[in-house]
Amino acid sequence: MADISAARGAALAQIEAADSLESIAALDTQLLGKKGSIAQLKTKLGGLATVDEKKAAGQAVNEAMQAVSSALAARRVELGTAATAARVEAERLDLTEFAVKPERGHAHLVTQSWERLEDVFIGLGFQVAEGPEVETDWHNFEALNMPIGHPARGEWDTLFLDHAAPGEDVGRTVLRTHTSPVQIRTMLSGMPPIYIVAPGRVFRRDTPDATHMPVFHQIEGLVVDRDITMADLAGTIEAFTKAFFGADFSSRLRPSYFPFTEPSAEFDIQRPDGSWLELGGCGMVHPNVLRHGGIDPEEWSGFAFGFGIDRMAVMRHDVADIRDMFVNDIRFAEQF
Image 1 (cartoon, helix red, strand yellow):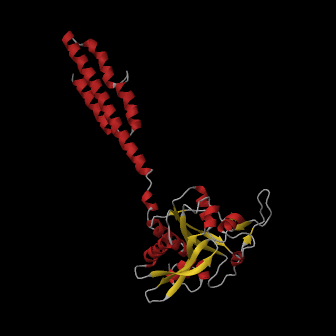
Image 2 (spheres, rainbow, N blue to C red):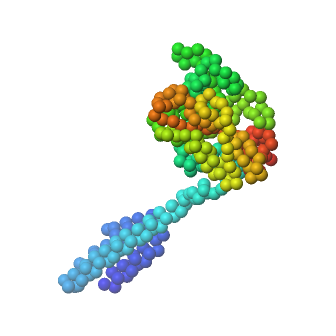
Image 3 (tube, rainbow, N blue to C red):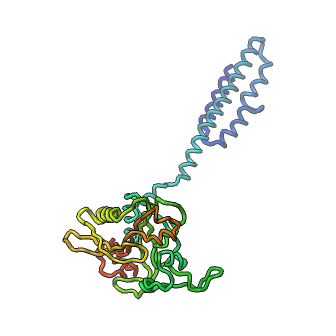
């Protein structure tokens, strides 16, 4: 019995000292195998004098084997858990590094104004709509009440593409001169009510100077619903003015002309010093434009407005020359 107790104690001590799963695997074979120290004690049971002694010793050997087996299993779980934890720690990814503020660079000045305008109009209940930058003459001009030969086309120095759809002539595809074609595409894609703004890049064959660029950005707004009036347009412009520029600013409408709206107006903002600044154009959507959009002007009415995003950035940040925003001079860009 003393030998069994000693063998059991030695085996448990070896198990406790094991420091890896490989060591546990080796001890499993060594201690519980047929040639193990405890198993060898079974061969000595035949030399005991009485049956009771043999029975007690056999029971002690079995209990020792069970104790060793349980200890091996427990140590295997313990070491396996530790090994898994070590592997997890070694392979851990610090994902928080992607959430920190970028050390270099920031959104472009125009992008900042673009995103701020979207936020303001979304807050007023509008949705953001998009359209292609390469447009058909029909979407860019004709559907907006400017058929071929209309004098209003002379206001845009259009860039035409050497591309023609099947059955059409070259010169009927353009780089869009404004984002107004998105209004037509939106109306054709679904029935009113419609409340959208359409920011985007536009193109005109302009010579770059302090106030003009051949590639610039506009944002258009379109509302089509029942019983829409000029009062709704004026209220929307006023709400936008105060939300974007501040409570100290106000707006006004002045009569004007645009082929796609009737009546039409220019809208100005009044700065805190009392001076007025022209911002963009607006008006009630022309019945012909509604018809081209598949909407009955006898049932629905709407208003539209549009202005330059680049110009908004220029005014908001008092930029003297619009070209400064696109020459990638770090001394200018880092100010914003």
